[in-house]
Length: 117
Length: 108
Image 1 (cartoon, each protein chain N blue to C red):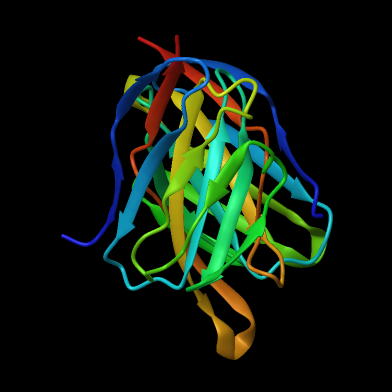
Image 2 (image 1 turned 30 degrees about the vertical axis):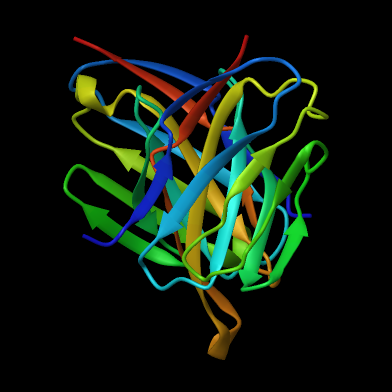
């Protein structure tokens, strides 16, 4: 089935450690996104990428890094520089409709819950 | 960036009641979506509705792009409708903007 797979679903990390969250999509979408959600809050954009080997910072990029070496993959690294990394992380993708400068529908993975001990 | 405001922030309904959720946005948009976040955190696509009206079972949505708002109607609500409803719009650079959500609690 086509979709977005995030792993791991749950992750525990000690303070000072880097951790990488995986996001893979087989929808052939060009654009991919990472969002952070804190309890009872909305979604905040961390990074997004519209094509391979290119990505842009979102609203809360500090303490995070990404890569986009393949179209289907957009891993997120939470570095030790991120002061409050405990959160729910959501990956999403869409296929921009370039012809009319419209953007296609956004789809989400099931999320990864990161807890820092 | 585009400002997205959702109302009400919280809503409590008795099972079987109807409700209307509103999403206002500050600029012209090419895309508007409604999502339902279930208690496990999963975001489910409800409607992709840049303009016009769509219906899917007990849910329907209307977007009036010229007046910069969208409405989500839930009829005959069920306990499984509980969760948080988000609307999202996108700018010409393929960046999505989300509202802060409406938290719905449907009581049996």
